Amino acid sequence: MVKNEVYSSKSRLVTLLLCLFLGILGSHRFYVGKIGTGIFYLFTLGFGGVGIFIDLILIIFGSFTDKSGSFVKEW
Image 1 (cartoon, rainbow, N blue to C red):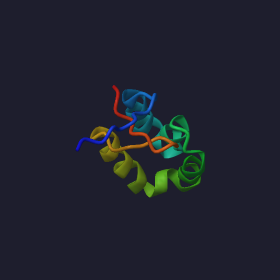
Image 2: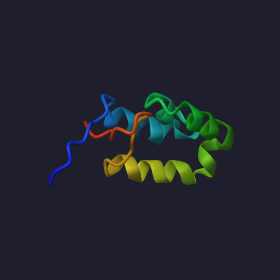
Image 3: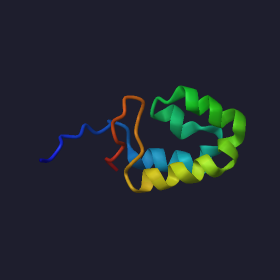
Image 4: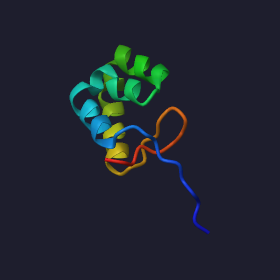
């Protein structure tokens, strides 16, 4: 049985570029509506770089979600 997944209206390309260039400020997390973790990334400089790396992997493979839990898949 195939599950109907709801995809986010946010762009995966924009999320990826924000993570690459401004990830240390948590901008990609603010963009998808994850304000709490965005503030955390802002104060911890991207969770010491580890968080940015993990988020990059998730974004590239289409497993990154927005605040409602919808996958950010559309380029």
